[in-house]
Length: 432
Ligand code: HEC
Ligand code: HEC
Ligand code: HEC
Ligand code: HEC
Ligand code: HEC
Ligand code: HEC
Image (tube, rainbow, N blue to C red; front, top):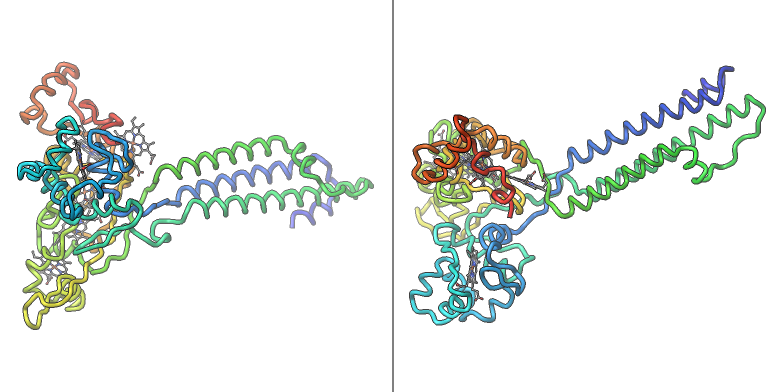
């Protein structure tokens, strides 16, 4: 040990000791920084949200609040009591297509329409699925509880080790390590000081009070203080925002479905299964009925035999022996891989149809992967980077852009018109 070496040499003096302590406190700070970066580099704080909550935030929260506050539309508080009964049924019809409800002459529907200055509510038929509408209704009824799943659902990852560990535990570990380090360093310094004193014939130092220690290490104390404040700020901030970079995130799925087999070998088009990608915000995951289009006939695969395909049959209640849907259904619970925080907005059709972006640009070559994983970081920097670099396709030819194009052409004479130039970096485009 270094301590022993010090006591055996005569060259020891106060300076060596303080140098030693100085280097070890530098070392210590370095370690501490490493610890902090490591901790925050790896920690993902994934707060599981019930689906209905997410759907509400993305489709309804623009116009409705959950309490009694009125935005464009009325607050949702007490809505179950005021709408015609059975409330679930009426709400379902209304959310799916409020125009149809009003056109059918529904007195209550016409009343809320008039009470809200004849503002228009969006029609959600074809925008969100029936199951999503039910999830939203369940969410409005009970905003905190997760929702029952009916057929095919995508669940948020549940176990904490899947998504990283909680900030709280991480901070606790950091704080404890910090205290231990400080205590150890303090003891080392005292021992060194004692050995110097022994050599010089001085009495050993008494126990060091915290104040003495602090006044002897003002710089260290200041740095620690600042770090503490930063940690506290970071904790508060992360409590408010769900922060996550889950690149390469690859959860276990309930069925060994392979993109390589289906999109690669069999060359099935991505949108055959992810039809939402061309229609709206979410690409969606296919329901087991889509699988059945082929798997009614294909009951065996080369790698997994009958075992995995049998799970599709269980999901839809198909009895291969009789060739009928006669068994109880057991929904497949795919675990969601990609998930942006609720406060950000991303729309597939805007990118795939209007922006002419290939799935590959964001999801990598899925057709070569056995298991779907998140290839891109999905951070804000990633979105912005592409918006800075990418020219808006069809700006000159798409009639949708005619007016805007004329204006931008004037403004950015000769330069390529990127997504940034048409306002694609405005906070409001991606944040509610
Ligand atoms: C563009 C704004 C807008 C969006 C988006 C919107 N609504 Fe509405 N909503 C309204 C307005 C306005 C009314 C009042 C009726 C009318 O004038 O059409 C209303 C009425 C309602 C009512 C009846 C309220 C009552 O007090 O009886 C319900 C329930 C409702 N909306 C649910 C939803 C749900 C669920 C979503 C999301 C899936 C949604 N709305 C999205 C504007 C919106
Ligand atoms: C035969 C149907 C089918 C085809 C074709 C298909 N997928 Fe999938 N895809 C699925 C299923 C089922 C899942 C959910 C299971 C999983 O995550 O592995 C999924 C999951 C995904 C996910 C991850 C979803 C999440 O949870 O975040 C992405 C991204 C994806 N597919 C992209 C593609 C792309 C790109 C193509 C075309 C190259 C494609 N898929 C073709 C069925 C299909
Ligand atoms: C367009 C037709 C088609 C669709 C849709 C389809 N599959 Fe398949 N699937 C096949 C074929 C064909 C095979 C056999 C592949 C082979 O022989 O290489 C297969 C094989 C499989 C296997 C066995 C793989 C192996 O190597 O053992 C599983 C599991 C599977 N599919 C799951 C699914 C799931 C889940 C869905 C729905 C999300 C789905 N399939 C949708 C055509 C399809
Ligand atoms: C510009 C980038 C981009 C392109 C292009 C893109 N995606 Fe996505 N995809 C995303 C992002 C970002 C998410 C996460 C969305 C979320 O959590 O709300 C996602 C999520 C998904 C999911 C998970 C389910 C969902 O919708 O949330 C699937 C499946 C998927 N994409 C399939 C596709 C397919 C198939 C294509 C091509 C037709 C495609 N994506 C094109 C960026 C992209
Ligand atoms: C691979 C490149 C690429 C990536 C990555 C990408 N985008 Fe885009 N984005 C585009 C293109 C191209 C357009 C222009 C589409 C159009 O013409 O409306 C666009 C347009 C948009 C718009 C509409 C902008 C406007 O001014 O109307 C929004 C909002 C948006 N993107 C959000 C996102 C978000 C959120 C992410 C990250 C999760 C993201 N984008 C990632 C290429 C990308
Ligand atoms: C092109 C889309 C896009 C634009 C424009 C955009 N953001 Fe973001 N922002 C995102 C996405 C996506 C996330 C989620 C990133 C994640 O989960 O790591 C995010 C996350 C954030 C966060 C949380 C911190 C984090 O990194 O998770 C803050 C704060 C934020 N954005 C503020 C802003 C402000 C302020 C602006 C305008 C100057 C802005 N954003 C413009 C897409 C965008």
